Image (cartoon, rainbow, N blue to C red):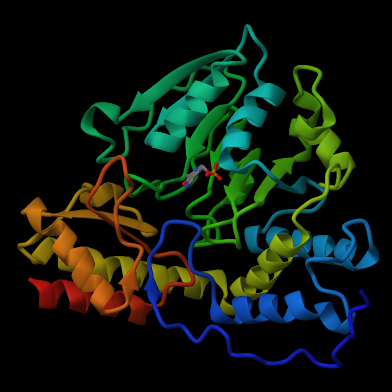
Length: 369
Ligand code: PMP
């Protein structure tokens, strides 16, 4: 069937935001990004073909990939001569496996900062390939705070692995540390939310579905020097260096998901990281201030470890929690149920959540109490 090109895509305002959504990921995206995606689904760039159908090895997608790379490196202030960028599938869990597959030999050891569920999952997965050591942990206190940074990092580690923001427990490292060991960072839930010294990382990755775009694709940025450190033979699909050689095109990538990421990267650059950071700081302050002063709610995380992205809380009287969820739903506030493993509430305040959205939640908290 031939697709008839429309000269200009219909400007359907399909997503006038009717809900205030605090979901942890897949998360809310800016309206402009949704609109741009909707337009491209009907007709990509006046080509007469949907973004869902353009060929992944064609010129149009090559241009999209090139622009994503330039924008990510610009946002992260990284030099294109030093870093490679990949869009991979398999989510965070595939990175938990690919990192040790590529960089941890059976007799060698990787060090982990055990600050939450995803850090622990990454450590357990690495144990399939080599030795792992937990350098510090707050597991015994249900990860309610960040563990104390290790006084010494053993110098024989293949790499040090850190999770910059702990999505489930709501803790966040204030900065990326410097260290002499190759540093690998899972930035899934706070990438692009504030200025970071990305150049301290030798590899960082982030699943798209929080602050980058839709689910189905994972951004990996890797220092070129790391590519030479592959410790075992691997099928190309699981090898960073083979993926880099193929420009993320060993298999058919999710073209439309990557395009939505590009629209969001444009949006992020238009806003500017500093203004996003100011807004993120304000949103977090608004809700933590309410939690610290409203006697029926209880913040879970110690003040010095609190995340700007995921605010985790409970009610003093847990028997009222489902009534509060219903109350929020009656005010079109959704997505604040805590992770199934911890219960309570979690408000995820990624970039697309506005200060006004948070004001609505705070006002619901006040009215409910
Ligand atoms: N790392 C972090 C910090 C996460 O928050 C998540 C998921 N929320 C993951 C990894 C796992 O991602 P995925 O579900 O795509 O495997």
